[in-house]
Length: 160
Image 1 (cartoon, rainbow, N blue to C red):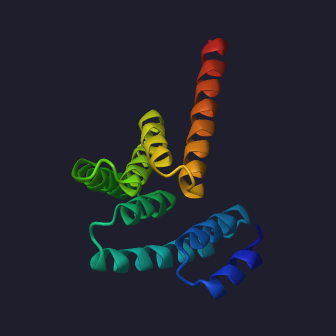
Image 2 (cartoon, helix red, strand yellow):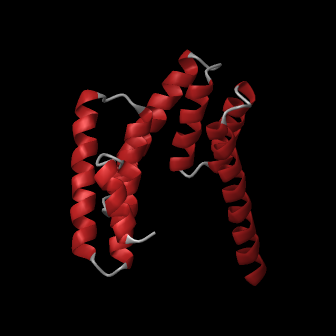
Image 3 (cartoon, rainbow, N blue to C red):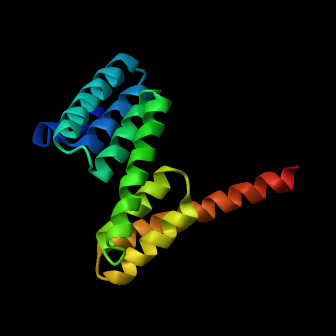
């Protein structure tokens, strides 16, 4: 997508964090690192303000991790992945039958790079609510990513 399209989306939805991150990445690819930095700084400011209000929201911590990672602040990113994983683990222990809790656990594991465990929890969420497009999509994306990861590992091992 072009810069103009993301800017238009943000005119309609100024607090869309995914659109803000995509705009920042598009600026970076377009050779405009200052604009990318500006957008990511604004995005971080929005997320941190939300964190003050909702400090125990799994998906907010995982979102912060993505933003910090794009900013190159990998220690901060890892902190929020760990926090999201801890919160999701507690939620699943409290109510393991909740598809929402399984969904968040899946996202937390995926953010930590633990794709097989992420798929396990995505499958549990999907099996609990097979009509959910969101749960089906997550499972599909994880299966695809795991397959890509395995084929990349196979390719690497064949070359050696």
